[in-house]
Image 1 (spheres, rainbow, N blue to C red):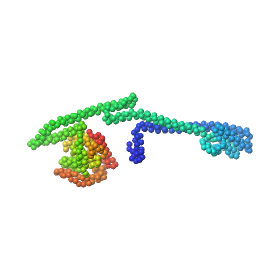
Image 2: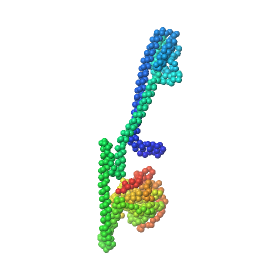
Image 3: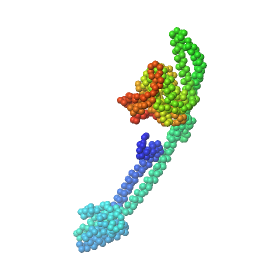
Length: 584
């Protein structure tokens, strides 16, 4: 998974990577989230039910108590024989009696609308009675109630409450009376309940997180042990085994892992033994063939030197015998070299070498092959590039790459590029011949592999050249890459460290040929030093001159650049590990 390089991306990158890499973290976090969600919804439902129950109970009690008080007040008014002159006094006395009882029990306040004005409990604001309730009481003889906000004229804070109202009748008049029941105690009870729910929820969340972490640890620990065991096996520790505890699924997993490790170890040991037998066989056969080959070589040379005295058929046979002996001797030498690599006996003899001069020598040495094949060879070497290498092995790599290009170049020009930077030197050999499929870029380094088995060898190769070249490159700590497309040619790139022990990170030359990158890539080649081998007659001396800008055959056919990204750089990477995977 990729992250943005911006500041927010960097801030989110590490937590997201931690999230996706840690199974216990995801289990604990998911459990916490689900627990908090369930507790939140449950707490809301509990508080809503509790609040509704408390308010409903308070309403029923308030209405019942107010109805009793209103009936008593109405009876007192009838018994007092009120007149229009003393009704206000009687109502005031009733309000005072109710206020005294309400204050004693701290249950309610009283507001009476008399003929002169409101008669109310001390400190209570008459605005605590909603206007809608007043209208209902004046229009009907029933007992009405509603919720309200109890307001005070003194320093007391407003509080929720219930107001119950009805009408009193005296001297032919209607006098509303209201009983206001504050919900102070109920609000306190609900606050205590809310705090208890929150505290309990937090404790449950912590406990559930601990339980989830414990369960995740019990589940992940065996899986982690299996992963570590698999990594140890991959690193070559084939004797490591998992500890089997119990008889559950994880125990069976450990048993299966141990059985797999045992079978894998057995198979690897068999393959190693078979490989040792094969290596010993190749080495022994190669050495044993030395003596008879020397005898046959001596006899063949005698026949070859005397071939002018033979009839045409015998003369041709002597020449073919000499040619095949040369090829057989080269194959035997390659087999011996391969056996040294397989046995781990190959050693480097490092010395400072000018790679450009070495490439020029290899081009000159194979100029006659290029002339016979009708293939011009162009060397692009802008400056000297010195590196600590084994001269014999690097010359062999370059010779194999150049001969391979001449073999498959189909009489088209071959370009050899030499570039270097502070850490590495690279040589790329580009031909425009038959090429090969993109999926065969690794197979070309296999032993005795041929893209076209029906194609005849013109230069007598053994089929081991590229395999040996890969081993030589790996021995230097370098890279050997191949690129090819059918009908568009191929390019082989050798990259070597300039100093022994240097870890390569990037090559001075791209894997994809520069003539396919486009005009921008081609323009970089202007003013390069050009060394050419001319076709026809004797090879001409190496000459220098400006290199023309090559055409851009890919300008109208971008589909052929399927291994380039948007920047024109090759998608493939060059780690040494990848190169070792390529080698047979």
